[in-house]
Length: 145
Image (cartoon, rainbow, N blue to C red):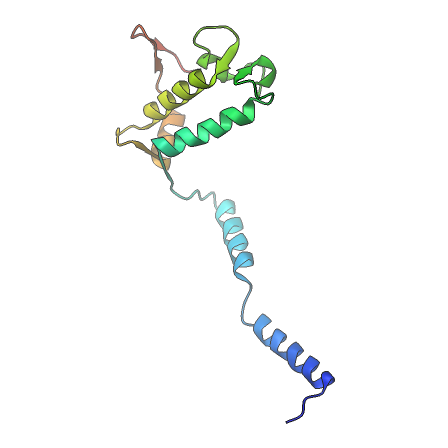
């Protein structure tokens, strides 16, 4: 059987049309499903371990520390009245990596309502609705704003 260039092009075009008619590509389907879920207000459940949370917070610290000097100062705060200032234990106007890490892990521990070392999306939502105050070194509590 002899196939000409025109015949080969036509066959390729027909094959492409046939495959195109089989359905949308997977990425388009995923994007469409994500859009429908967002429109319905659906948030998929999630579980975050303490280790994963610590890694995320370390990356967040380095993203906030724009000048790379190992501390977050007032010029690097996301907002002037940032709640991050609560992490400044020695009140020097700077948050060290240690202050940030310990403060954020303490927050994780307050969100971990059943103390299993993971925070589920349900625990995170419960904490957001009713945040637990942070304990101070003397045992009293600091109210959550």
